[in-house]
Amino acid sequence: MSLLEVIFKRRSIRRYRSEQIPDDVLKNILEAGRLAPSADNAQPWHFVVVTEPKIKEKLSTGIWNRFIKDSAVTIVGCGYTDNEWSTIDVTIALENMVIAAETQGIGSCWIGDFKEEEVKELLGIPENLKVVALVSFGYPAEKPSPPRKKSLETIVHYNKF
Ligand SMILES: Cc1cc2nc3c(=O)[nH]c(=O)nc-3n(C[C@H](O)[C@H](O)[C@H](O)COP(=O)(O)O)c2cc1C
Figure: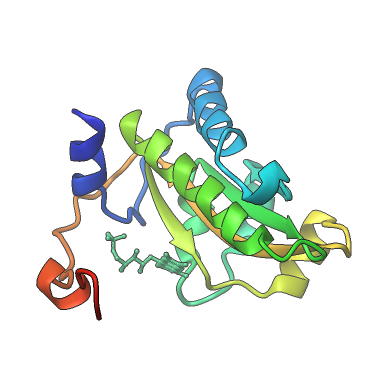
C-alpha cells in the first residue's frame, strides 16, 4: 500500500489480537515519533511505552479506554509544561507513530479518556510534564466500517472562508 492508501484506509482499532509487536517494528514506530517536526526543533516530549499487563489494566479504568488492557503496547505522550508548543508537538509525534504503525499492519487508537493525575502517579511521570494523550497499538482483531467524515466541500475554503 502507498502511504496515501495507508492514510486513507486507517481506522481506529479498539480490538486487538494477542500477538506482541516485534521489537524492530516497535522501534520503527518510536523512531517515527522521534523524527517528527517540532516548534524550534525543541522536541519537548517524552513517551512512556507501556507493555506490562498489570499497568495496562490499571490504565483501562475509563468508559472509553477499556481496550488498553488488550493492546500490545500503549504509548503515553508527555510534553514539557513550560513549552507553549508541546501539546501540538507531542500530538504530531504520536500521529507519526500511528501512521508508522499502520504501514506495518498495526492498528491503533487515540485515547483522550484518561485522568492525568492518575496516569502521572501510576507511571511516575515528573511534575514538569503533562500527559497529552495515550495511543494504544496492536494487531487488529476487527475491521471497522468507515465512520462518517465531513466532505471537503464542507470544511475547505479557498482564499476566503
Ligand atoms: C484526540 C483524540 C482522542 C480520542 N479519544 C478516544 C478515546 O478516549 N476512546 C476511543 O475509543 N477513541 C478515541 N478517539 C478515536 C476517535 O473516536 C476516532 O478517531 C474517530 O471516531 C474517527 O474514527 P477513525 O479514527 O476510525 O477515523 C480519539 C481520537 C482523538 C484524535
